[in-house]
Length: 68
Image (cartoon, rainbow, N blue to C red):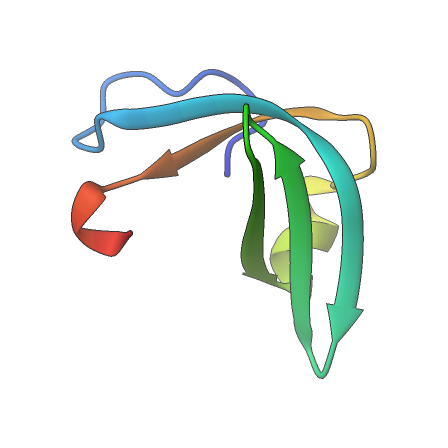
């Protein structure tokens, strides 16, 4: 997940979206992003805190197709 449009990287799959929900459970964080379809992203709580992720924020989801 990136707060700005990522550039110059090997991952070719980037989806822009808006955060719909942020929840935590057992040290893990789950961020629901409306990127066309709604996608659920699992992160660490530290990542959510470091990026200060909040509902309504625009983000970019970055992934390699081998990880889907």
